[in-house]
Length: 362
Ligand SMILES: Nc1nc2c(ncn2[C@@H]2O[C@H](COP(=O)(O)OP(=O)(O)OP(=O)(O)O)[C@@H](O)[C@H]2O)c(=O)[nH]1
Ligand SMILES: [Mg+2]
Image 1 (cartoon, rainbow, N blue to C red):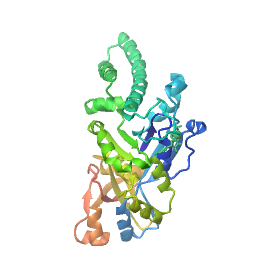
Image 2: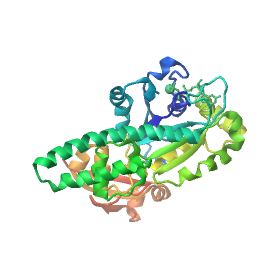
Image 3: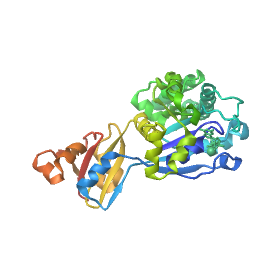
Image 4: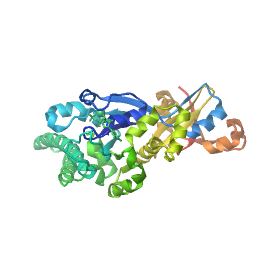
């Protein structure tokens, strides 16, 4: 899973990237703006600890999320063709967008539009993303119209109708993630990598001095939170970046002292999973206990294939048990004795927390 971090200049994108991925990318300079930062995080998961006790493996492999902190260019700086080749091309590949919004007040840090106004900024970025999508639609439409002039092709006519609808939607200032499409149409247009179709996580970047009002600030965005495939997270990038540079022990003390509860980053990760409708399944043996990510509704054979193509090619069945049942039993052997290991076939829809023992033969 890959998440692209977007937003206006100097809103704290790279600070959040650093906090999330424990990186040290440069912040707050012109040079820093030109650079795309890429890194992945290990998804913390308490269930891995419990499974560690059962399998006693040589290594534990958590699930990962990749983050891309795209160079913070804005339209004014570049020609459309350069934008398209640069950061927009990078964004087409991501599964979701995290839009960082500046809420923090700091006279030292300039705002490109002169004042702090997150609602206005959401619209500014939405317009930019919609504009990029409209360009793609325009190009494809021209080609379709040309092709349809010389031959009859029902699937192309249908595509044209769907694209017209997308165009009208964007022109009404509605992102594509908000329209309802049939599953086939959705799959078809997903091929274009439309930016406004991607799920959106709004990250309200508040200052350390605003922590007490975090809930109030969050509720100001309730309207957005209610929209399809949209979630809101409130955190302080600067604070989180500082926390991410502490030792594990100090983190706990610090979080308790600041009254932060669950760390903002853990919240961020959980929200990302929810937004993307992801689930986690586990595999375990004496070598490795591993957490992997799937989309809700994906099947056992897809789970197998996500680990290794051979597992999918030679898939026979998956011995399946919910992780908590396995932990209650204490071992796979005990679980088998008790008849708690189910034999599931290719089409089995994997559930969050399943432990799969994939039987295959190649
Ligand atoms: N006071 C305060 N400053 C912050 C906060 N988050 C970021 N900053 C500062 O804002 C400046 C810009 O932060 P960056 O993380 O580089 O922002 P960016 O969005 O990556 O900026 P560009 O890549 O240049 O577009 C830096 O000087 C940060 O220290 C915050 O929560 N509070
Ligand atoms: Mg940056």
